[in-house]
Image 1: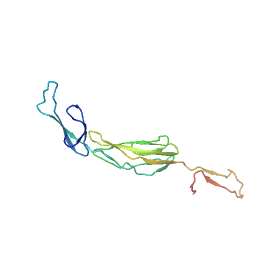
Image 2: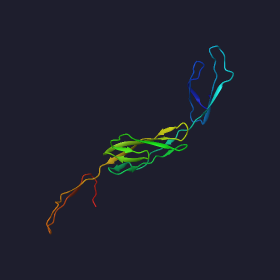
Image 3: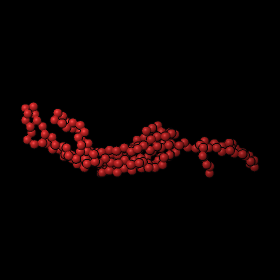
Image 4: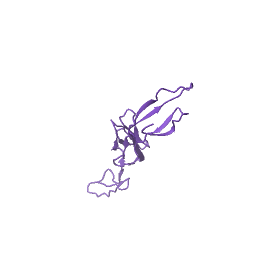
Length: 171
């Protein structure tokens, strides 16, 4: 083996070998054999190995909260070779779903973890998964009023308005 380290196997009694290629760009495996009649091959069989680097699944960026009824766009910050493709997942699809373009759609109030797996464009389709990104789905405010629907002209009415979510502002 050149360009890597044998982790297991690869001895005269093994018919398999496990190699850790590390960050090498290429390597070779050379195998010679002796059959049951004690005949050895004239030359070793050499297999050239190309090691594709893994893509990098960087941190997800975007707002960490969204209101019910509004979509939220998140961004994958990935690098790698070839055309990258993405598969996004939500840890709790009962709170929010996420499309493969990173658009979060709220389903119910709560929190969920969003992550993505990026696949590079190499022939080996190398993959990497991002760290989770927590998204909180907030309820929409509900406004209630003590006003009655009909009042007499010239009569003042005290009207109290409340919002069902703390921090609600009125305009």
